[in-house]
Image (cartoon, rainbow, N blue to C red; front, side):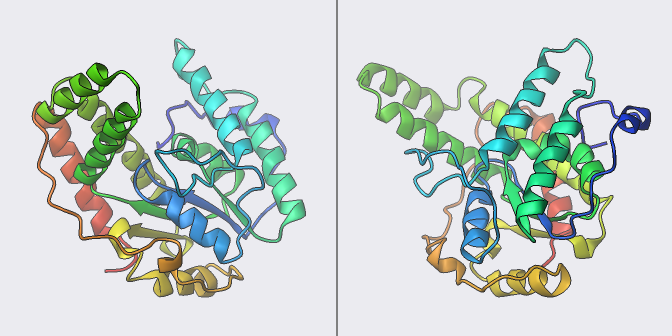
Length: 279
C-alpha cells in the first residue's frame, strides 16, 4: 500500500461516490525533482492547475505552482497522522477532497494539481479519482541531495549571522549530521509510494519521466498527454519554461549515509528507470 494510513474499505462506505472526472491530472514528484517546472509548463499549455499559488521564494525563484487548497488539506491530514499514536485514515479527508474535486470539475473540463504531499495520499486519491491520470517526474537521489545542500547553503548565506553560515557550510561540506540522511529517507519513501501507486495504474494512464528528459522529450510528453490521455492542450516549447542549463556535474556519495539506505535508494532508482515511459 502506498498510503501511510490504514484504509479498510468499510471506512469509505460512509462517503458517496465521487463523480468521474476523466480529465484530472496529478503532477507527482519528490521535492527538488522538477515537478514545479512540469506544473508551470502544463499551465502554459492550457491546463488549469489552480488560481492561488504559494509565493515565489529565493529557494525557488521560478515558483511552486501548488494549489493552496490541495496543499492545506494534505498538510493538515499529514500532521494529524504524525500526531496520532496509530496511523488511521483522517475521517474528513475523503469528504474534503471530494469537495475540491467537485469544485474543479464543475468549473473546468480539464484540470490538475501539484503538491508534494499528494504522494502520502495516493491510495486515497486513487479511490476518489480512479480515472485520474498522472505525470511523475523523478530525479536521481544524489542530485536531489546535492540540490538540497546547495539550497541550504544559499539560505544560510542570506542570513546576517556570518559565523552561523560558516559553521553550517563547514558541516555540510564535511557531510556531518543527519541532513543528507533525512532527505535520502524522504526520497526513498516518496518514490516507493509512487512505484506502489503505478502498480495499480494502466501504463497509458501515467507518464513517468526523468528530469533530464524534459528538454529532449517534451514533444513526446505533449503527444502522450493529448493523444493517449485525451487532454486538450496547446503545445509550448518547454525550453521557454525550463531553460537549458549546464550539464549536471558528477555528484559524489556524501559521507556518513547509512549503507542500507543507499542500497534501497539504488534499487528504487533502477525500478523507476525501468518503468520510464520514454527510453
